[in-house]
Length: 193
Image 1 (cartoon, rainbow, N blue to C red):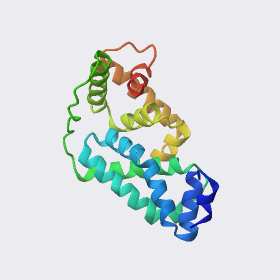
Image 2: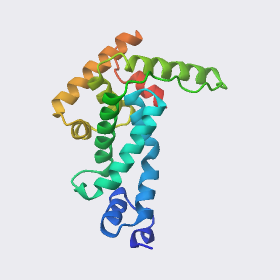
Image 3: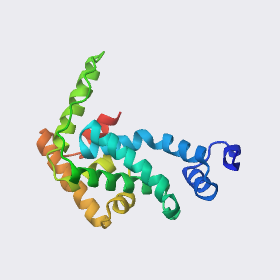
Image 4: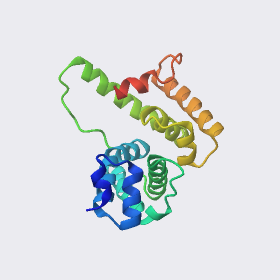
């Protein structure tokens, strides 16, 4: 067994390094499991339906394995993963244009869950009606907590462009949702709670 397993809870960088240097399959498996829901969640938000999100997630994981040796440790592994997810989502979006499939019907147990489900559906619908580049930036920032630097690296645009896309995207979202714009992240943050 490789040395990284003896250190307790290895970092993402420890795991990718173990895979690159020794071909440690457990390390890459642990790393992919660690990020599976985050990659899927981002792909789902960017693509709007489960089948495409699943396809994009598969592509990202294949890319991680194939391109692991190109990871340069200059930024966090998660930043590199955002970029791979954004790219896979872009590629898949160009290839196919499936209509969004509604989320599974789940019978909520409380009025708060009903409100939360309705908010989530309204936000998902509004996100589909703003320009893709703005939606991508807003989703990365407000739903996934990515920094401006991470978003710039993931999308390949300057930080000023990222900030502009987020501001314009939030404004359009709130116009679509009929909400006041005094706190542009209020609705999106509420969804994640």
